[in-house]
Image 1 (cartoon, rainbow, N blue to C red):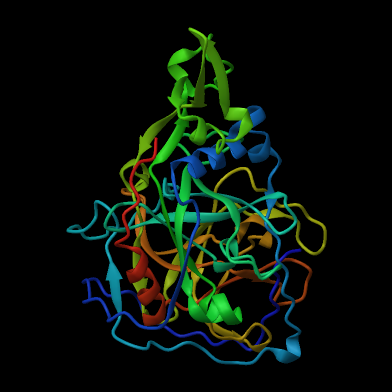
Image 2 (cartoon, one colour; image 1 turned 180 degrees about the horizontal axis):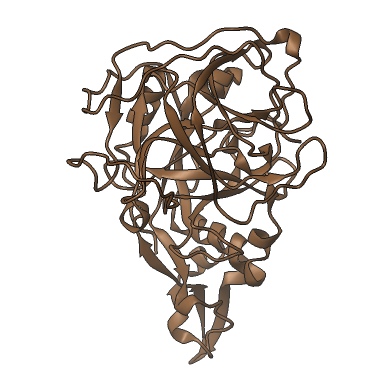
Length: 396
């Protein structure tokens, strides 16, 4: 199902991000966190899940479609307000630089897709982006692209982030999630105002020599010898047994360390407690059709839209502090898309100030015209602060 929100009675305000960097607000709110992959064997099995059979699960994955329909009569005028001082976190490599303007739109390297197994045991994906963190290992997306709100489970299975994904290509490797962070109110109450998540990821992994290792004899350097106990924990498709000198030798497929996420693609900054009415670029992988059946996007390539944010509420999803932006992105695939303030085309960096959690046909002409996000306030900064200092490292 697709998450579609019907909005009305919106309020627009003005205000641009201040040129200077304000001091960060104090962390606020409650944070929920859950482990994803807990060790190197688990990471290898997850990468194998997506790369076995020539990347079959990546190729066959479909956009994640969690539907929440909000009747117009339950939508009211309103808007978010800052709960503390405005603040920004500069992007990776942009800590001491000022942001310049450019007329051309160069797509960010930081954006990609998160893949996971849903409650239906099928492969799905959302949009996501790399963000600034101490260890250059943090991904931001919608909360319901991390936590399974359909079955009320804790987290999605086999969770990975692939920046620059295109037709099963993984140009900078596959980054397996280590720890997921969201707001307590979303984890427990599915509060739409807190539908965001930050996930720390391990160093990226690539298949040895860029190919699938067939057997130990033909490609011995693509395998590593392991203990029998470890062997039994690996996916059967990435393990093997050989016999030499009358003894069994146990092997597991080897993966190459692709390095840290932020070192490879950069990381967007973060802005919170900003005035509603600022212009933002939205970057994501929209897919699916409009209500009238027009199939505008394939979900295969990264797209962008641009507009000023405005205030909206949707009580049916407990969304009292949402922001919207005019966008034709259809809901399938665009969930988790990054909203970037002060985007610099030269550096392909800006400040993350929203993530798409739903779309809407506000003028009722059967064409999607609006994307919506939680308002990024001090509560969000509290969740980000809990995630940004967690080390993950290499498990190759």
